[in-house]
Image: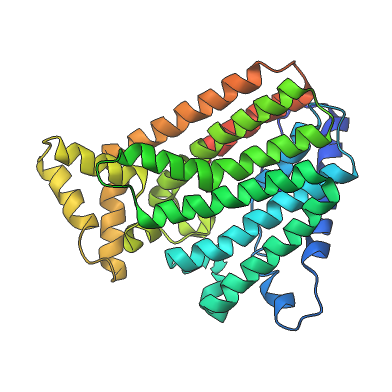
Length: 335
């Protein structure tokens, strides 16, 4: 069930319908990963039963209510986007070397890299089967989204080309890795809920902006959150040398001539050998307190404001009110 808190001023009937639909989505998720295979029946459910925010399914439902509301295809679309998200997490954790996910051991830590990757592929296959039930437009959208997820991960792994803008490269990675699927959730919900064409377009633009805001907020959470509440290992990206907005901002500040003791101390800490937990914790503590992390939260807020401006242009409704609150919670969350 989604951890998103519904606004208190929502109509009771509307709130109840969302909760009922979310429960149905959860049931269909379980059905979608069910298999008689002795191995996959455990691996495929590993991250799903660990929980999750279910923000993408909830966005599908809210987007549908900007039209005629939910129906059977909308519910399947909600399952489709969550399956795709889950599949990507299996792959991401292998590539990032993450030890935990959602408060439990990452799948590759339990069964090894090969099993984790193949489990992600299995979930992508189940998601693709669902897209076929929704029609050719959904199939094409899902395929394009899958392509962008792969390109985002590839570009993050390879890094920016020589003389390329490191910040624009990073934002493009976030747009592909996170924004594309959130945008797909909004588009599918609006389309299948028979919303107006301009509403469908707005939900696509909204998803791209809120996806970047979400991931920038995640960069902050990775440094400042309690792992017991976030379910993530702090500093995973630091240890793996994966660029994040705080590290990019810090390095740019130093390159621009800031050689103050505080700046050089943080830079030295994040560029040291971070294999030991003590060294990693020290680097996380210093970077978390650095102005670069404050600026990252400001950037998350700016992208969140952009997303909110898009939603405000839609006709007033219960769904729009819920989306506005939904956006604020995504950007200002602590886990």
